[in-house]
Image (cartoon, rainbow, N blue to C red):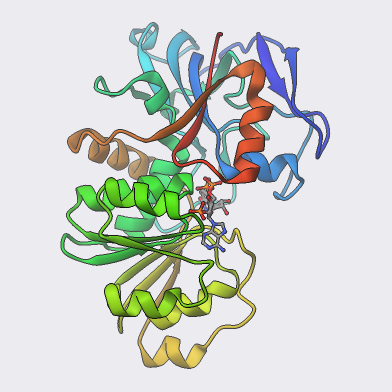
Length: 333
Ligand SMILES: NC(=O)c1ccc[n+]([C@@H]2O[C@H](COP(=O)([O-])OP(=O)(O)OC[C@H]3O[C@@H](n4cnc5c(N)ncnc54)[C@H](OP(=O)(O)O)[C@@H]3O)[C@@H](O)[C@H]2O)c1
């Protein structure tokens, strides 16, 4: 099969003939129709991810049709359109993943290829109302957003939630889910165009986090949110702590802008804030996310669909961060 292979750090992926996967007991091979990119893929190419082993086939998100199954797997899966849960070996506790947890796409070969080998437990039927491309946007972003908003963030209808960096794949799916749940959603972005598009999609309003006065505008227009979903951290984190309502929750699933240089602990305890971490999601979270998006007929937004052969262009777009919606990689022309 053809695969996009990362052979060395900070170098482009190369399209290569890669061994066809063969399913072992409990496994299945999916012929991929679509994949989608996450910042994780970009971090790995730059060496900014723990435990990198090369060569690697990146790509955590994928959808396609089951081609073959190994022993012990229901043969009825063969020919079925599916989405693949990107989480592998979460473990027994819903509170946090175990030591053996992995994300598909390094060290296991990922979805930037014609086929992917998965554990049958990772298979889930593709929702009929979505295209293969839309389906491929959901595994990492959807599961991460779902757990952060509902499991860790305890978001309820009517609550006010601020989602930072709405141009991000997880953030945008989070916005769509929070809106579907009946929350009042506000967003931040570095781009006026993205803020306008978020408002068109249902956000109540937004603020440009590059504007030094944004926090004052936010206090005035939005008031104090009871939940903030953030994946940036960095120097802006102290503004978010200032903004959060007393008793509020800040859920972080990333630190794109690095560690916060300072933390005003006084505000944290005086306002009785909960600073919560969240990562991906358990198989239960993945299934709950799929049920939730299907119930609300949520369609992930796609910025561009790129052929597998041009996957490097997709990674370059992630680096530029100019997209609004997911970058999808399509198998075939
Ligand atoms: N823990 C987990 O399970 C998990 C899962 C998925 C992702 N993540 C992490 O979460 C982060 C986002 O991932 P992604 O795949 O959604 O990335 P992405 O699609 O590449 O989004 C990156 C976005 O981050 C926003 N951003 C950058 N600097 C910011 C700042 N200083 N303040 C606010 N927003 C800022 C930008 O939004 P604008 O364009 O709107 O300015 C940018 O578009 C990454 O750090 C990733 O590693 C963690």
